[in-house]
Length: 431
Image (cartoon, rainbow, N blue to C red; front, side):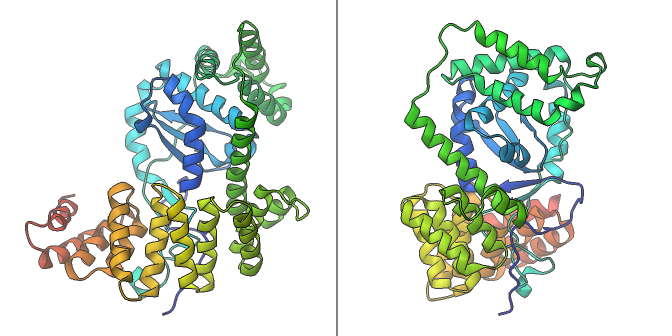
């Protein structure tokens, strides 16, 4: 079967050339959730309602919608050097929410944001080239809209209040509020010279130097700053470096990856970033060697096996890819992207029972975290009406109304009228 394998961060469907994209990756989302969760709890946000979104954009930025939807830009993640600093950024953004600064635009932002962003999956190292998936031209690694952001300009007073609230939230969560100082120092390095030429009375945000001084003054008045466990902090920092390495490995140029992580650097994060960029470039032997080194060092890390599964898939070694993904799933919990990757390989390997296993995996994923890829695979391994319904959902998630309705009509001709898929096809036809 003819197959075009493209790496993850090539162009997906060009629904909106100006739209930002979301990165959907189990490892990154779980690690950032661990970092952010203590702040969310201090802000009285229930744990089961916190949702992390990673925006593929190089801006040094983040925002919170509704208090519980946290949007963090890859530019921020790649530049912020510590998890505590990242935690402080989110604390500031949650401070805006607690202060009610975003209420006026939340409804409009919600409707706009649910339309234009494209979700991409880091975990599966391939994606759709375009055209008809049934022709074997590749697979969509994920597309679903959530919205192109229109960032707000808060008043200077609101920014000061959010900074103060960030310090309070950090202390309440028992983390060092000097993480906010770290962020402001970094902002000064980036924009200090430009800000020297700005009239502070002509902008809506206070200048970074003012925010830095205000925050230092507030922190200086706190009698007992939280103390961090050294071992716990070291582990968290190490995990964060792995997260940053993954993003840089996938998103940055080869030259930049090797500048940040030269071959003389033998750390886990450096090996990870280089393995990913080597995989992207088709240097599969080198990528596999690096990944196997990481697995030897950390045999309980599910995401190194996930990367090995991606590499073996690109070799065309389906059996080895299945083994790697299954090991990854054994070690991880609630990993829809990895389940989808395994379903994809099973659908292509096509040994006895592979289609049934792939079907089960796709149905499981669709219940938890549906994606175009999961629907496309389900269509591939199903028959008749179920296949048509899955294709209708696939096109619906890709904002292709014409094809969504076409396949929904086909599905209803073949499905029992009381079946869930028949009813869902009807929902697509009503829109």
